[in-house]
Image 1 (cartoon, rainbow over the protein chains, first blue to last red):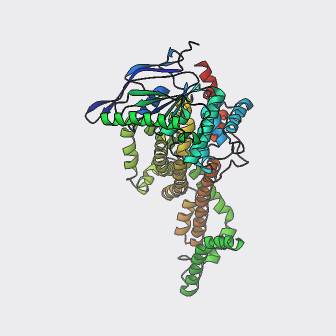
Image 2: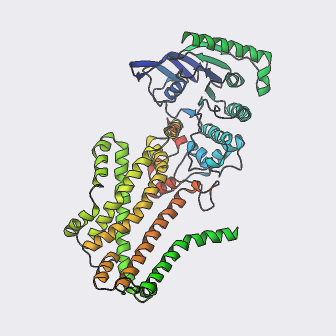
Image 3: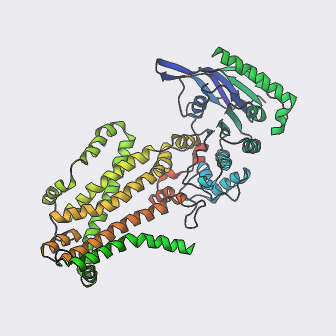
Amino acid sequence: MSEAPRIAVDDLWVGRDGRDGPIDVLAGMSLVVEPGEIVAMVGPSGCGKSTLLGVLAGLEAPSAGVVRLDGVDRPDRLGGLALMPQRDALLPWRTALDNVACSVGWSSARSGDDESRAMDALARVGLDGFEDHYPHALSGGMRQRVALARTLASGARAWLLDEPFGALDALTRAALHRELERAWRSVGSSVLLVTHDLDEAIVLADRVYVSSLRPGRIVAEVAVALGRPRAAADTTRPEFVRLKEELLGVLASTEAVA
Amino acid sequence: MRGRALMGRAALVALPLLGILVWYLVDVIARPPAWMLPSPQAVASTLWTEHDRLWFHAQATIGQALLGLGLALVVGLAIAVLISASRAADRAIYPWVVASQAVPILAVAPIIAVWLDYGAAQVTVAFIICVFPVIVTGVDGLRSTDPALGRVARTLGASRMWVWRRVTLPAALPALFSGLRMAAVFAVTGAVVAEYVGADRGLGYLTEISTSQFETQVAFAAIAWLAVIGIALFAAVSGLERLALPHRRHSVRPAWRTRRGLASAASSALGDADAEPLAARRRQG
C-alpha cells in the first residue's frame, strides 16, 4: 500500500510582476493529494488559490518547485489534471452532449463509443434528457452539472475544482455536493477542491488545508474523520461544528498575520 | 395572434407603400416631365418590358459584388487572424487599415478603373469597401473569447490548435457575421460606384447611360433592382448566420443540426489530422 501520491506539490514558488517589483503569490507551497482522496484548500481570498490550480494544471509555469503526478516529476502535465472552474466555461454554441463529448474525444468521424461515454457521464450527473440543450437553456446548477460531466468524461484521474459551486444557491449547491461525491466515488479520482466555504470543505473533503494570505503557503492541515456520505444536515452535528471552529481559528490567525 | 402577425407584416410594407403613394401624387399633381420623374406605373411597366436588359446588367453587378465580397471575406479574415495573433502585426497593419478608410473610395475608383479591366475594377472596388468591416469585426471577434474557455479545454487535453479552431474561431462568428452583413450591402455599392467610372455593363452603368439618354424610367428600374440585390445579399448572410449559430435562436439542438459542431464538420471535410480524439492523445501522453 505504499502507493505514490496522485498529486505531490513540493516547495512551489510562483512570482508575479507587481507595481513595486516582483511579488510572491505562492511561497513554498507544499501539499499532497493521495489517490482517491478529496482534499480541500481554504484560505482568504487573494491567497493564490486560482494561481495554484493554474500551475498544477500545467497552464502556467512556477518560478520554482516540483509537481509530481503518481510519483513522477511531470513538468509537461497539461491534459493530465482536469480543471473545473467557478464559471462553467461551457462552449455556448455546443449542446450539453457536445460540450461533454469534446473532452472524451473529437475525431472527424466520432465513434458511437465516444458519444455513449459522453451520454453516460451526463446520465451520471442526472442530466439524461437534456443532452441536446444548449447551455443558455439550462439553469446555473444544470450547467455546473454539465461541467462536472465534462470533467468526469475526460478520464483524467485528478480533478482541480476552483470554487465550482460558489455561484450557486445553497440548495443547488448541496445537491451538487452529492453529485460530486457520487461521481468521485464512481471513478475513484483524486480531487483538490479550492473553496472559501468551510461547510463545503468539511462536507466534501478527507483533509482540509488552510492557506495563508499572500504569499500563499500552507499553514495548517485538518483531517475530517466523518463518515460518508455526508449531508447538509450533518453541518449541525457537534463533530462538524468542532471542525469548523478549529478551521475558523486557524483562518483568524492567518488574517492576524496578514 | 394571427391578427398581430398580420399587422407586423403590414407595418413592414407601410413605409414603401407610403413612398410610392407620395411619388404617385407628386406625379399626378405637379406633372413633371417623364425624363425628370417617371410615374410609378411607367417604372413598373419598364421593369416588366425591359426585364431581359435589366437582368443582363444585374448579372454583371451581382457577380462583381459577390466576387468582391468573397475576396473580402477570405483576405479580411486572414488579416484579422494575423492582427489578433501577432502584436507586431497589430502595430504595423491595423492603424493603416483604419487610416485607409479616410481615403474616399469615390476618389480612388477612377484610378482603379484606369489600371484594371472592366470587371476586375468593379470587383476590386467592392473588395476594398467590404474588407474593412470584415477586418474590424473579425479582430474584435477573435479577441472577444473568454480565456477561461480555452484554459479549461487545455486542461482537458485540447491542443492549442484545437482551442483556436473550436473555441476562438467560433466565438468570433457573431461579430464576424455583423461585419459580413454590412459588407454584403457595401459590396453592391462598391460594384456600382466602379461601374459609374468605367464599365460596359452592370446596373450602375445602365443607370448612368439611361439617365444621359433621358430614359429615366430605366434608371429607376435599375435602382429598384439594386435595392433588391442589396436586401437579398443581406438576407442571405443573415440566413447563413442562423445556420451557423443555431444556439442563438434555439434552446434545444434543432433537428437539421447533427450532433457535431459546424467547425468539426468543416474540418472533417478538409480531412485534417488534428481531429484526433483528446482522450487518445491523453492515453499516449
